Length: 367
Image 1 (cartoon, rainbow, N blue to C red):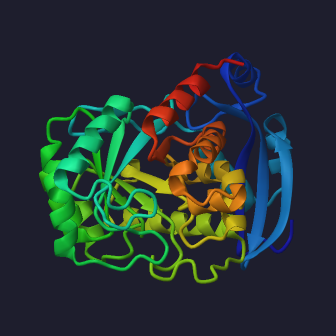
Image 2: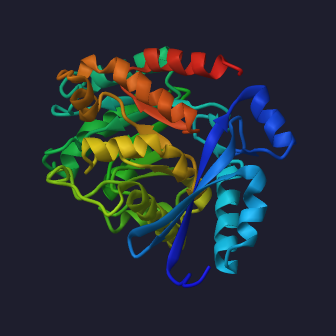
């Protein structure tokens, strides 16, 4: 192929298999393991892009990849080999302070605790320390394997609060949960809150700005040993839904997260500590969200675990006509399964009991 300068290659695993079919297909060379298993894939979509424009897309069976690569320029062959390695390799085990280990053999449920008066779904319901702590304990009883605690609403149109307000909301809750056996994540974009939360007992940093909001946060986290979740968002909560636009939402979000991973690594944050989140609903239209949901498996090319936060999101209401966020359980479960079927590793939810039941039924199936 001529004119390969500045051409970027993307590789999306498709034809995802489970159970004995997956094992048989891998053994016979018809498929490869997805993120080390238990799912496998027997086809890939290979996308070429140059200067923001998609050039071509080829659908290739795994068994025919060697023949396909032989006809490409050496740089593209190397790109495909690197992407295949990222997609197939076992994700590293993540260890947390509470003794929990994530080995990614099934999707994990992350339960949401919003210690805020204005979150889009449950703002004000758990706005005191006692309410938030009791809710977190209920979520653990319901099956949450991670508890995500946030003190600043990042819903569309939310206004920024002071660091002191955020600290006052979340740190007492984290301290009161010091006895729980599941890891705690702090949902914040502010370095001082990250530092105080880790000191109080949090295990995971969950940043909607992918460590771009607070310029000092990355250097601070480089010296720590915690897991960091990097989420994509276009602009800030105050204006992110003001006519969001992309050249290609799927590839643009992928490129952004790829860049943030590289920046984190350069700053000294080991890639084995990083998780990515495509940021459903954060600076995206309904059409953008649906495009991302339909193609989540592309993000396995980044080589790190994938988190999906779709619970009760507004675009579910746009699709279903359901205006009340708390009434969007069915849509949330449906999109959760879309994530499971594409190998997503963590699902962030409000409705833990129902989500855990759906996950466990999904995981029990062998076909």
